[in-house]
Image (cartoon, rainbow, N blue to C red; front, side):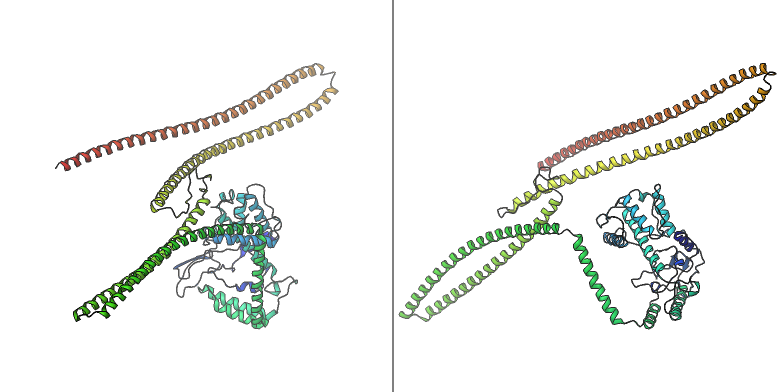
Length: 640
C-alpha cells in the first residue's frame, strides 16, 4: 500500500519544487505540518549558479533575466537531459563523512548485524544488498529483495524513487571496488535522506483539517494555518518570478512563529549549548569505545621506545660534541696561557724599559720615537684582541650551524628510514630489499666523500628496484588485458551456445507437447475401439471372420506405430548427438584460435626483439663510425 501510495504521489506531484540553491539553514517545510499522501519522488537536481545565463530544472527550461517569469509546474517534467553529480564523490574526506553518516543511520535504526566504519570502506555485494533491503524496508515494509537479477532491480528502484543520477548495472557486480563504491555510496546516502524526509512527513499532521480522517488535529488551528498559508503564497509567488532564496520571508515567518508559540531565546540558546556539550561527550565516548585501548597503549609504547632511542642517540651526539668542545677549550686554554706568558714578558719588558727611561736621560727625538712605538704596539694589541673576539664569535656561529645541520640531517634520515620500512626495504632481510642494505647509519667518522658514495649506491639500487617494479607492472597489465580479451571471447561464445541450447529446449518442449497430444489421440482411439468392441461383441456370430481380419489389421497398425515411434526417437537422439558434436567442435575451434593467437603474439614478440637487436647493432656501428671520424678529425687538428 505504501509503495502504491508513493507511486501515485510521484505521478501527481506538481508543487513540490526541488531546492536549486544549496543552503545550510533549516528549511521552513520541516516546521509545518504535511500530509502523508503528499510524499512522492524526491528529485534533487544539480545546483545551478544564480548568475548563470541558462537555468535547467526538472520542470522545464527557462532563460533567466530581469522581469522574466518562471515556467509553470505543468510544463515538461523530467527532461531527458543527463545530470552530472555535483557531489565530490572522489574526495576521500567526503566519502568518509558519508560512511560515518551511513553507519550512524544503521545503528540508529537497529540494523540486524554488526556494521562498522571499517567494514563499510569496501563492502561486499551481499552486505550492500542487506543494507539496501533494510533501508528500503523503512519505505516499504513489504519489500523483499529478489534472488535473481538484483543488478537490474536496485537501479530500477532508485530510478522509480526519483534518483536524479544514473547508477550503472555493472557497478552492482563489484560494489566494493574503489571506482564504483563512491557512486553507490552516494545513492545510499540519497536513499537515507529520502527515508528521513519520508519519516518526517509521515510523523507530521495534515495541513488542512477538512481533508483529515478525524484521527489528527491541527495544532493551534487557524492562527498557524493562516501564517503558513501566507508564507507559502508569498514564497511561491517570488519563486515563480525567478527568485531562488527566501531569507527575508524565512526570517519573518520564523519571527511570527516565535511570537505565536512564545519562544524563549535564552532557553533555546542554553538548550543548544547543552546539546553541543552532550554531543561532544557522546562522540568522545563513541571514539573511546571504538578504539582498542591495548592497541593504543602498544602504539604509545612503540612511540616512547622510538623517542628513547632518539634521545639516546642525541645524548651520544651531545657527549661527542661535548668532548670536541672540551678539546677545543683545552686548546684555547693553552693558547690563553701562552698569551698570558707573552703578556707577562711584555710587562717585564715594559717595566725594564720604564726603569731605563726613569734612570736615563733621553732626547726629545728618543721620547717621540718611544711614544710612536708604544702607539704602534697598542694598536697591534687592539687589532689582535678584535681578531681573537671575531675568531671566537665565528667559532660559536659555526658550532651552532653544525648542530642545526646535524638535527636537519637526523630528521631527514629518520624520514628516509620510516619510508624505507614502510616500503619493506629495511632491514636487509626485508621483502623488497633483495639482499641489499638500504639503511644509512649515523656516524661522525663519515666524510663528505663517504656520504656521497653511500647516497650514489642507494640511488642506484632504488632506480634498479623502480625499473623492476615498472617492468613487472607493465607485464601484469599486458597479461590482464590479454586475459580480459580471452574472457570476453569465451563469454560471447557461452552466450551464443546458451541461445542455441535454449532453442533446442524449446524444440524438445514442442516434441513433448506433440507426444502428449498423440497419447491423448491414442487414448481417444482406444475408447472408440472399446465401443466398437462392444458393438462387435453383440454381432460376434455374424462378424467373426471380419473381426479376425480387423484384428490382424490392428496388429499391423500397432507395429507401424511402434516403428514410427522408434524412428522419431532415433531422429531425436541423432539431433541431440549432432548438437553435442557441434558444441565440442565450437569449443575446440575456440581453443585452437586462442593457441593460434598466443603463437602469433609470441612470434610478434620475437620479431620485435629481433628488430630491436638489429637496430641496436646498427646504432652501435654508426656510433663506432662517428667515434672513428672524431678521432681522425682530432688527429688532423692536432697535426695542424
